[in-house]
Length: 151
Image (cartoon, rainbow, N blue to C red; front, side, top):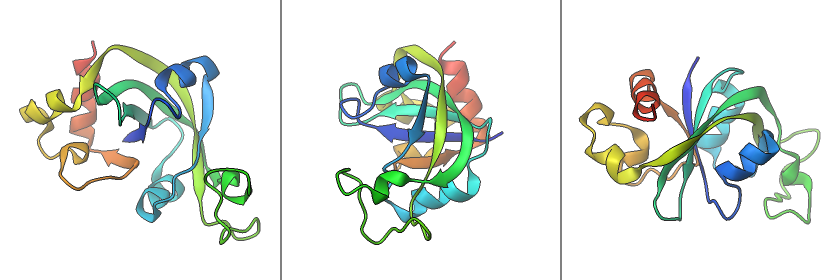
């Protein structure tokens, strides 16, 4: 089992939306490195920290799990979708997504400030300058510590 962090803007799709829906395709990722993580590395049962960006406070708001491994992101084929990509074809998709299932909404956000201050989270990617990936792996040690922080 691996740990991941998926960023989202709550005005686009929030932890509350995931709680309501219980399951969603995590689509619309248009960065090749993040796509590779989704396509090649995310596996059923992996834990996913849901991170709200572009809001106050910024941080981890809950947890989900991967409940279906990668499959083509059909939003790339839909001309009416904001994530449409004319280079992606049904028979040769460029973009992929996984399905996430809701696990838990945290009572309190684990803020980015708290993450940066915690010595046990030193080196975590989300706190590094210049890291803008919407999907990123979390080291096992960091993932276990983040889970403890919410209990």
